[in-house]
Image (cartoon, rainbow, N blue to C red):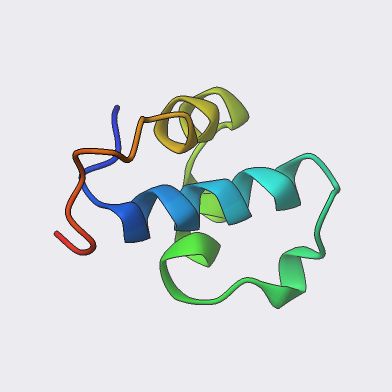
Amino acid sequence: MKARSEAQQKAAGAALAAKRGEQDPDDLQGASREMYDDMSEAELEEMASTAHDDLPKRA
């Protein structure tokens, strides 16, 4: 699934960092916390890697 906004892409990136152990999961809030709990690392990778050049700031 591709990100629909820059905010969604950033949240996926934060959740992905936590999944990989690069960030403390307790620091996540809101959408990034939900993504961390509900999505696999592969799903987060796909969403976080979406090119953000043509994405709106918010969906």
